[in-house]
Image (tube, rainbow, N blue to C red; front, side, top):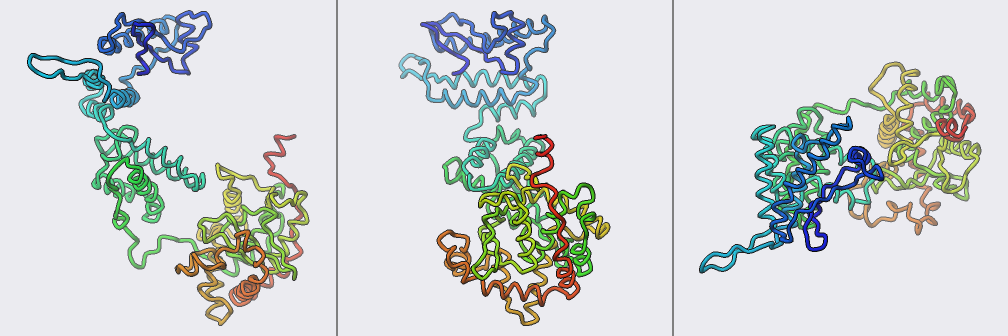
Length: 521
């Protein structure tokens, strides 16, 4: 064990000093280097069982010695473990599991076979005494939590969550952060509403269906059913992984999704909507001072995005993740965007560009100093977070822009361009355009709901390098459908505004994020 070492033939106790206190303890004890990483004291015995019994008494004496020296030096003592006993409990848990099969002695009785004494038997005695100390300071409930943590069997929820997220290399950092947030919420629930003491001490097998259901009910008191549906894959997925790995036998979350209360018929949780034609005209006709009133750095980006998002129906994440190499140009001059980063696999697709959108992309490429294949198409927009998400930046910038131009209307947002495209596609379909439901899903990056389409058809795999040579021939029907969405789905005043502002794009004021320019200067 880490706190018990053998030097020569004699056993010694070793007290590890927290790294943050190495210099404090070294100064207090007057070590030659001024640093003390550990303290070692002989236990005066060669017998392992006797050493194990003496170890904790010696460790306590060493802690007292260090605390006295720290106080004398005017420094705060080492943290009293009973103030936060869970760390100690987890240490004991590890010792119990490590010593479960380690025989340190035998107890012999007359006419009976020798009874082995395991190291875990000695550790259990210390745990029970320590639990009494915790109870004396924090009460019986704290004592039970300590015993549960120290004597618990199996992998803890927190340890399983860390291992699972480490294994899930395919998910984005933003998704992993969302899962971690759910696990923190579940940890708080276990601490506040159960006797398990939190995810650091509770084993996977200790979570019952009653606990799982209680957590979902608690979440529904403060968030919507849609939010809980987004959170559910974190906990359910963790237990499915644990079952596959053999860490637990049952998933308490199975079939729990049905308990998530849905909105009542007639009640719509999403209060956001598509833009009206008047709102679109106002956004399209906005000048440089309205798009970016201060220094104009975001003016060209906003000018371009308003048109690209409206005329493609793409998610902001997809567009803001584009590189210059993702702009495809056919021999006949037609242009398309190769979407590689999107919310779902179905979102990886080829989107043809309407001439109004193609013009702003062409102007953007012509203005950029670096148009290498891997160079970002939006270098002036800073990337945020672990996923280097430029869409997050542009979404926050769009809020004040929207309020400047449209007033205090919270029913629309950056995603309203996607809603507007979907509405235009539906309108064009009803007017007899060359656009149907399956084509709309293909253009917008939605699963088409059939194995033949989503798995086998090459139309859903056009971003694959092996199929790039076929893109030009496949663009024609996509362009026809897209042109009908714009021609038949958008009102005439919107099309007029697009045409009349086609040459009004603000000049680019910078080619890298302003924060970076300030640092480099």
